[in-house]
Image (cartoon, rainbow, N blue to C red; front, side, top):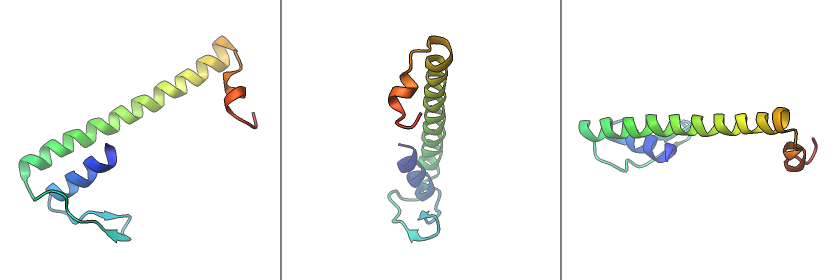
Length: 80
């Protein structure tokens, strides 16, 4: 969701989407100010959701390691 909304946001804003300056991607949407605003919001909230999911996973690791002390980390990580 984050990648595709960024691609759509860039296309709707009139920028030529490219992948790290190596590959020019085709514009998947026409230039549109309203669509640009929508895709900006979708892209921003997708990034926030991704960060929240990562934070929840980190907190879960810390809980299992230091509070529950149930060895989940050792079972999941082969070299730990």
